[in-house]
Every structure is written in structure tokens, then in C-alpha cells.
Image 1 (cartoon, rainbow, N blue to C red):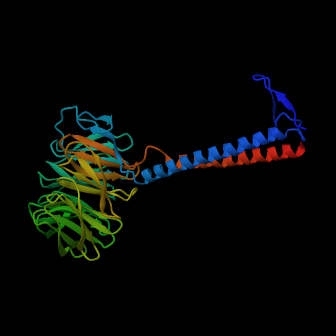
Image 2 (cartoon, rainbow, N blue to C red):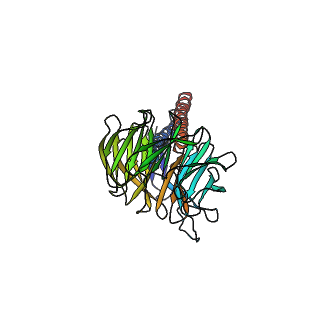
Length: 407
């Protein structure tokens, strides 16, 4: 029977289900515990759903991470500063072109000091400075183990041995601007815009073996899939396609005004930087036609491919930022601000960084393309928490059920 309980406040008798004489011991306690368990399940479920939504957003942000300037390196005094630091030091350095050496070093030509800076990619500090010829511009790494520097003011190529970081040879050329290595025939190609020619160098003998005539060649790249050399012709607004087996020009492709940099995308396209049109022309090597043009910043100069993100990074000399292109859409997906007059650019696949030479700042912007948050680790930990919580709640409900049956 139900018992009447006197209220301590009113002095009146009230009926209370949970103070009646229970038919079975612990019934009211079990009901309250079960109710609290259901409420806990609902609360935890809503919290986990919210966390999963946040995690999904974080994963999306990581997949579309465009990068940020992690460090700025001042060449004049070898000072490394966090972030996109404003130049504070007087400098006469003018970093021009840049290349990554798979041994873990970055080589930078300095136009005004007639030297090459060697940067340790692990510490991002200058380890040495190598004297070369006058006004060094283009630079390339030869997988045979050497670095080749184009000295535009002395009509020569300096050959650097990375093991000793010393110049071991100098090759005379008619003139020079940029250089590329052909992995198929193991030769180097040097553009000479003033002489309207391309010098072909045999690295085994370090001599010029042949000269190809074109009109104002400037930038140059190699397409390993189709085994073709692509050269930007600065004054004529064209790209010459050269068959390295015959050393003959196959065709000329019209692009934008004053094309400079050029890069091959492993997905099968060639990207041309049109410095006078503020655009990138995309060439399909299968047809040797321009399939689209992409607007970028002012006076773009160089371009590099990031094998990790699959994006292309373009230096905009007149805008002080680099543009990021998604080649699957052929659209700009973002920009990263750097220092004054960004010029050369290269990608370090080991540390997953982009290196940019800032010509008038005398600095190197070191851009990280990795997210600072390890979202994958968070994802795993969150799922462990979810599973542990669900198991814990199920065990709690089972224990309550057993307790009730015993009572």
C-alpha cells in the first residue's frame, strides 16, 4: 500500500511513489538510474555529433590547406625569423633563382653578389656561400650529382660539386638566362634570350655540343612523358617545342605577353607564366594547344609544382604574393603573402615546403604547405573515445538490468 508522508514545510500529508513500500527492493532507484542513463546517452550522442561536424570541417580545411609563411630567412646575416617578417636589415643581396638538391640543400643564385647561397633545408640556415660568375640567374640540379649555375654577365656555366660546395668547372656559352636538365638524354639546355639560341651541354664532358636557334628564349622545362623541351620566347609571346632527339623545333605555340617561367605538371600539362598578361597559359602536350588561361597577380615570374598537394605555386613579382593553382580545376584557390618582389620558387618534397626568393628584400620566404594540426591523429582519438563511451553506456545499462532482476 502507498504510504502518506508528512511534508516538513507544510506539515501536510502527501503521497510519494518513491517512499511507498516497494514491491521489490530498489525499483525506484533502478528507474532513476535508467532515466539518468538515457539522458547521458542523448547528451553524449549530441556532443559526439558536434565533434564529428567540427572534425569534418577541419579535415576539409587540411585537404585544402594553401600554406603559410613559416619562416623568413635574411641572407645578409643568416637570420631566421618566424612568419612573414618585415625586412629590418639593410641588404645588398638580390636572390634570383632557386633549386632544391635531393641531398637536403637549397641553392640560391644571388644576382648582385655573384654567388650562390647554400641553405640546409633541415635548419633553414645558410651553411656556405659559393663564388661563381657575374650576375648568376638560372640554376639546375643534375641527378648525376652536380649543380649548374648560369652566369648571365660572364657567358658561362659554373659547375658546383655539392659534396665540397666548390666550383669544379666553368663552361663557356654564348649567353645565358635559365637552364633545365633532360633526364632522358642526360643533357642540359641553356636559354640565351640575347643570342636567340639554346646551348645544349653534355655534362660528361662539360662542353656545348649543339646550338638550337629560337626567338628570344627565356624559361625552359622538360616534359618526360612526351620527351619534349618547352621554351618560352619572351619577346614573341610564344613557346617553342623542341624534340631533343633531333634538336629541332617541332612547333611554336602562341601564349600571352612576355612569357617567362614554365613548368611541367605530372598530370600531363605545361603551365606558362605570362608576365605581361598577368596570366598562366595551360598547354596540352598531346595537341600542343592552349586549353585555358588563368588570371594571377601582377607581373608573375616563376612557377613550381608541389608533389604533395598537387598544386602549382606562382610568384607574382609585382604583387608580393604567390598564387596557388588547383590543376584539376585550373583555377586560383588562394594566395599567400610573401616579401618584396618574389621571383624564383622551388619545392622541397622532404620537408614539404615551398622556397621563394624575394628579390628586393634579400630574403627567402619558407612556406609550409602542411597543416599545423594533425587532424588524422585527432580523428583516431575521437573514434576511440566514441567506442569507449558507447561500450561504457551499454555495460551500465546491462548492470542496471541485472541489478533489477536480482532485486
